[in-house]
Image (cartoon, rainbow, N blue to C red):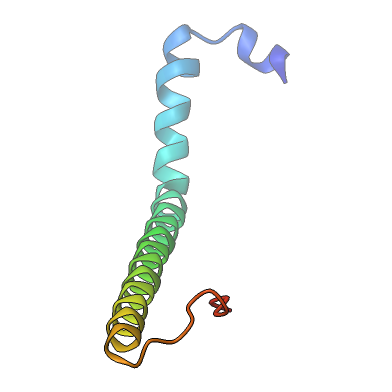
Amino acid sequence: MREIFVGMPWWVKWVALPVLALFVFGGAILSAVGVLVTLLFKLLVFVALVGGLIYVVRKFKGSSSSSSSSSSSSSDSGW
């Protein structure tokens, strides 16, 4: 493979070939990047929703346990 590129000028190796690769595979590269960005966004939304759910449950559990009769909280393990 190196023998092919030995006689080529520098601009063919460092400019023309990458431009051709982007031209040919550009759609596939953009598609892969788009899928990755979509997955990361969905993961971020999932983490935010789980965090919000945990916050709401803890707040509701804390307000309902404080308004109920004084029960022993040391025996409640939380799981």
